[in-house]
Image 1 (cartoon, rainbow, N blue to C red):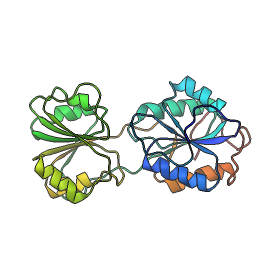
Image 2 (image 1 turned 45 degrees about the vertical axis):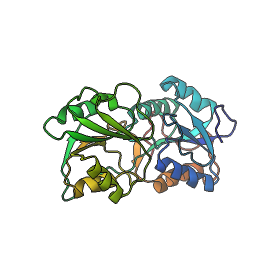
Image 3 (image 1 turned 30 degrees about the horizontal axis):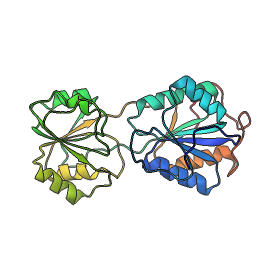
Length: 274
């Protein structure tokens, strides 16, 4: 059920269209915890979580504060994409200002294994600059946003894989492959071989849905340019799986009944509630 307006019932807000966010929404729904999931709306055909859903941004910190009050949100779990730095920062600021408990749910990062050839870069722009001397046929798996950082790499050929087409500038020499994970290792190997890929550029999103490309790169001895995650907001508690996040919510909600603001033992002036 997709909604946009407020309600009289206190609820928990789960941010993000990630697999972890959907898992958490399912757990809370099963425990009869009133929950609303919020998706950014950047994917044309998103996988929807169970229960109530809103789609679209909040319009900045101040409008998010208004929304939290209007919708009587008693706790927030930020399960957005690990690279959704702006929404995480706005959420932390809004929750702190409204004294709403906040927890971050971020899947574990990928880490290199034996046989991997990774170079870590701090940004997409740094990744584009690092392509010089690394490879000429690039497998770019960073989603549709940020592809423009590679638009000026005219001496490289790109295989760009994303769920939806990129918006804005794109590389001049490019093949676009629209696909959604999970992906199989053997299929990834076949794809890289068929396109003669000699370097993989990806974000350290973590999770099992798209990590097959890393195993394929390992088998084929293809170097990887790995974009480092942005730092999370300071002072916010963090877990790496839906189970502990559900336990955190349940511990604050007293089972299936979400407590009303002002009586659930929150500390004031901080969103670091773990």
